Image (cartoon, one colour):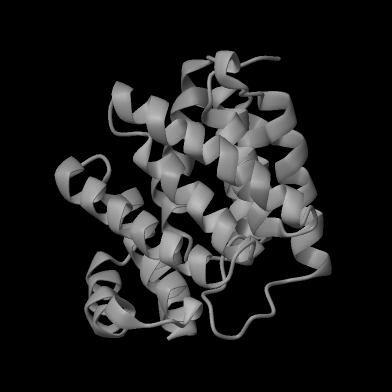
Length: 231
């Protein structure tokens, strides 16, 4: 299941992710095993990511379900950095659906992502989620592109030193993901050459990284062609 979920994540495979949800949900409904709750939540979380632009209603439902499962997991195994990091990411995803949601869930994402880093500042998933959160948050609410960049670069090194060793949860949040978010950060900053470098590094690590190949790279090309970048 771990390998199947990992592949579906990087390939943005909606059909396979839905299959995983259907498979895990009966166990997740009543389980006290945080690993099952985590993997079920992760599938819902990434379905929310994929569907956010095309089916907002369904995407919100997936984000809500991910948060529900992760809160249960957090109650079972409090202060587990893996659970807290994904909870921060799920709140961040939910924050993207409207102004009111951005206030409620954005605060929760800032809180949980900070908690994750405080629990383990060498965990690459905690660093990525915190970096992602700070990258998207307005400065008024504590966002910082500079701090996001520092954390994402730290995540690259952290992933190389200590990859996820828990064989019961999905493998994600490694160097490929850190480079993907660094590519987005540099793209938004108007640095297409640096964005392309990070995107290429992500694809070297995960050639099947659909989001990088099909979403980030085309936008880098558009930015470079338009000349809308900093020298």
